[in-house]
Image: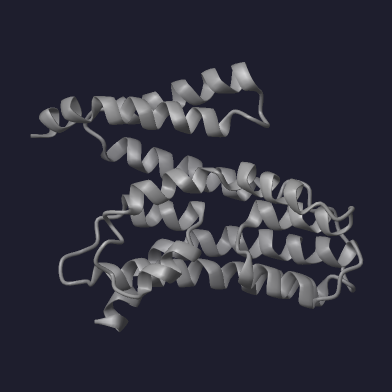
Length: 229
């Protein structure tokens, strides 16, 4: 059962392996360039596991002591996980003790896979979700470790590596678009995101966009369910 779930989950995480490995390496090199020892990126990738926040944490560690500011900044950067968590409540309901790690290991990429993939019949869903999460975090930890160990030896411009994740989400969006019979949710997400981007700017549009999308989808749920039925 466990092995079968692993074999089913692994192929879905291969694109994440490519992205996380390069971003993790760049993160490890970045931390070493700031003067931190290799232990910092290695353990931060294990214990924090929030890519964008880990980059931000690097600069916060070099600034003055401000726990309140750090907490607010962390909430702002990772507020989207509140909506991820609400979406995954029903999926993680009957997975046993694995739920605690699934909550900790939730990231954009694991959410995308666990939320969108129809787990094949005969494969335990709890173990499938678990392996997706474990594999994705292991890729990030591996990349960060490699970057941390090689960071003092290699120096190169890492600009552009972040586009790997952008390309990945474009592919995931297109795959979901092709699977949909009607594109209400996809068009809603695009439209609201563009509108909030214009109104709030690139730094602040994400949270209001997710709030509006969540509200609209909640109100439209009865009509969407009727269409599916």
